[in-house]
View 1 (tube, rainbow, N blue to C red):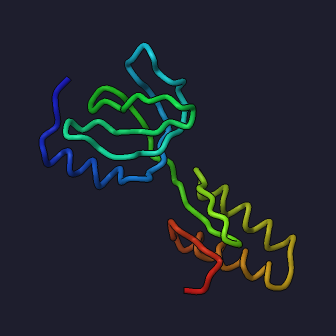
View 2: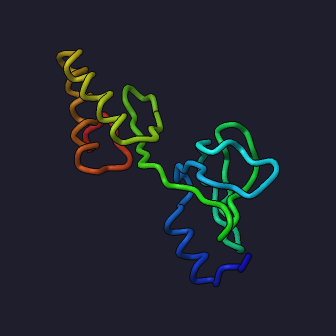
Length: 130
């Protein structure tokens, strides 16, 4: 295993900012969480390891150049003051589109407002007018 240069660590920090949702593809460790386990990046250390809070409670970090993860197309929505992190933008869009068709009046407007932001590529979508 080789350690990353300081430039590579900075690139990792930009690629995996705090809050990035990931899924485990491969990990070389006896205590490995199952492939497919999802987690949230809490930071990147000086040797390029991703510090991760795994959804299953595992505390292992992702080792630079050894383990493999994939970024999820996650998005956060806030509707009626309730924040939700979605691991898939498509899943969020489908939910709010269904909400548009199943509601009316101001509720429909809230869902439509969030749906429009999802379509425009926003990563943080609220039902409040900016």
